[in-house]
Amino acid sequence: METRILKTTGETLVSDLIVVREILEKGGLVAFPTETVYGLGGNAFDPEASRKIYAAKGRPSDNPLIVHIGDESALFDLVKEIPAKARLLMDAFWPGPLTIILNKNGRVPDETTGGLSTVAVRMPSHPFANAMLKALPFPVAAPSANRSGRPSTTKASHVIEDLTGRVDLIIDGGDVPIGVESTIVDCTEQIPVLLRPGFITLSDLEAVVGTVRTDPAIKRENLINHTVGIEKPRAPGMKYRHYAPKAKLLILNGSAENVSSAINSRIAALLRDGAEKQMPGVEASGEKQDGPEKPPVKIGVLSCDENRSLYDERAVVLSAGSRKDAESIAHNLFSVLRQFDDSEVDLIFSEDFTEIDIGTAIMNRLLKAAGGAIKEAKEIQNDSDWM
Ligand code: TXA
Ligand code: MG
Image 1 (cartoon, protein in one colour):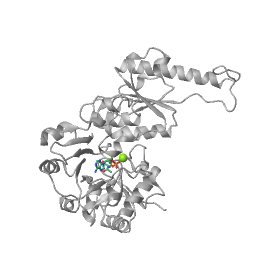
Image 2: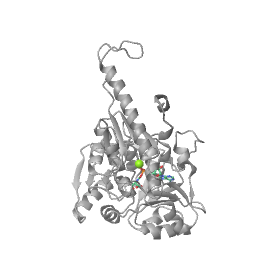
Image 3: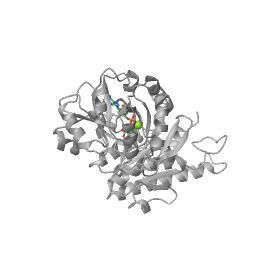
Image 4: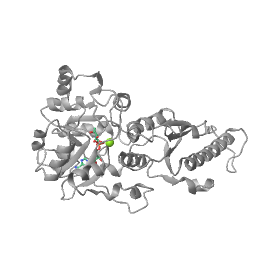
């Protein structure tokens, strides 16, 4: 499939919206910017379009799609009722980075909701997305515009890398403002339940509707090492390893000094072992090595502006932003994970981040990218503690 790329700058052009509408009406796919991440959109009422979305992403079809709308009147085509607390949340946060789960009505195809009796609805505030949705006669089902399992896309270049040849059109709207996906809250029960943390925080939600429960499956203790009571998340997508860079990622918890010294000594040991293995005639684990010699490992470190200089200069150290500005870290996180892929590192160490406000969303994505691998830096004394 040929993929067209359309750049939008500033004002949204009617001619661009006409191109988008023509493609979507024919059941085609359009990737577009939202304020959170780029979305991969198709007509939410067209089961064939939803099937194409799953195929383009390589996504399991039990993982439902979020349905995007441009104004509230579109809700009546999607849901059975709007509970009072959902209404309050819509009034407070729409348009914006909040997705609300409601009981769906018969018009939404099972292909869009992964067979669930509920539907996830979101009204984005991004000017292009909002204008596009207002101009369309149907809502748009859109997961994040990345190949399944990879970090979400926050720049058009990420979308071009993942989806060229797989979608009809990519709208290049530049960098997205937020950088992590929407907060998801389930309003089908009396007490709303947070299913995915995001830019709108638990305390933001509670300020509007009172108590909000958190799905146990997304709590830190259940994301770590996948050891403690493996809970089945209520947002089906949260069960998959996600956001993952190609290299293995390990998070270190602790003070900046403990984290950098643990990482530096590990880097020194790994590079020494790699260099020894490269020397001809050297026996590795008692056996002569055959075949091509393994090069020394290339190691990445995900750090913050303040800590970058603390690390071994042989490592690829990338900054996610400043600790004083957690939103900058949210904004850069996926992009930095993709940069590690571009630099072809074999292993990534990451600092951890404070789980306050948007920090909860940052650590949720980072822990998922790491497959739950996190260690206490101060407990690492020797090589065996890394195993
Ligand atoms: O910010 C966002 O929400 C972005 C932009 C494009 O809008 N979209 C996004 O979609 O992150 P996606 O498909 O990557 O993630 C949607 C999440 C998945 O974890 C999915 O399982 C969950 O929402 N979800 C969708 N419908 C659901 C439902 N009816 N009940 C529970 N979880 C649902
Ligand atoms: Mg996604």
